[in-house]
Length: 341
Image (cartoon, rainbow, N blue to C red; front, top):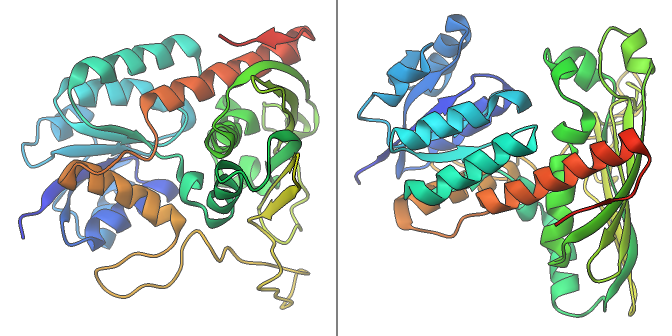
């Protein structure tokens, strides 16, 4: 079988997820990895069997074996890489968000339209079993018209203090809220029309991380439904898991609740209190296969490039998410209700 050449830009935690998929699926080949840190690039190359490791993006994009590029760099470092990869004629998948400002996101969306290349945004919660089941309950009409609900996706302080060296250049709103607003749009098939929001600061700054502690928002949908949204980076570090992701929608015919994190299926008491585990994102699989929604989402990009399969999420979805997050920031800064196009 002829293999399609994929390359990963960003040799951190999430880049490793990309590399695992491309080194596992039989129709894909991990031909290159790239990171500004040569040691990390070489380590990823060795771990996943890539052919080459680069520290210069231009050299990677000039490699004729690279047909598709995935971007797994920090939140603020996506758009320029996407634009360069598209200009080089590569298919591209990026982690969220497209960019952390609206103008850059619009440039990417326009570049995707004119490129003629495949572009996908890794909004992997679209294939998260709990979110997908909620989507089905809404689209089938079983729930009835949504009236109100809430979405919470928050992290413990471990994430901004220890996991992300660049946390001061992002926030829980951008790091987590991107997933939340896309999940909401995906589940409801509806668009956010107006937002109100507040943010609180101080705790993380006292710990040496210069970013917001939490954003809380009220999202008013075009249909009239109202959704409350929380993105925090200050959950206690002894929480059972480093993230908490919950959703609830109340409709005319009933309610649906989703808890994709601490669902109680696995509970460990071996020191340090109660600990749980992610039983959906990555699951055991045999050679040549992958398991779990995190890997499945990345594999959808392989399907799109190799077999012209449907894209999980598009640049337009990324633009919609950035518009909502930008409006939340403005609402939190001004105290005003902010309308979205």
